[in-house]
Image (cartoon, rainbow, N blue to C red; front, top):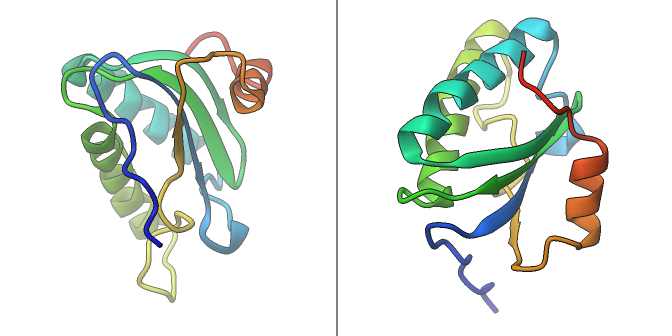
Length: 129
């Protein structure tokens, strides 16, 4: 049975996570993290996406965002597509798949007190470098 489509309307609050394929690292060093954050810094204002909290761990990341007019799917596709291309050039892989595990899960909820949201907020950094 296929899963229900995501709620992807402008202004929706999303807890977005992405994990490395087979739990592999998606950030090897500070250069990877800086590249990812710089892409967010440019892309989110362009798409009207608001970033409230974020946490980058070695093999996955969390973000709490409010989607803009472009919608969350299009924004994440642009963010991850550019990052994965650069990441794979810097860190050659044998497999041809991107370093993300399956489809990046996005849980949407109008309730900002969910466990996943509290986790993202508790482990977030308050400002971008």
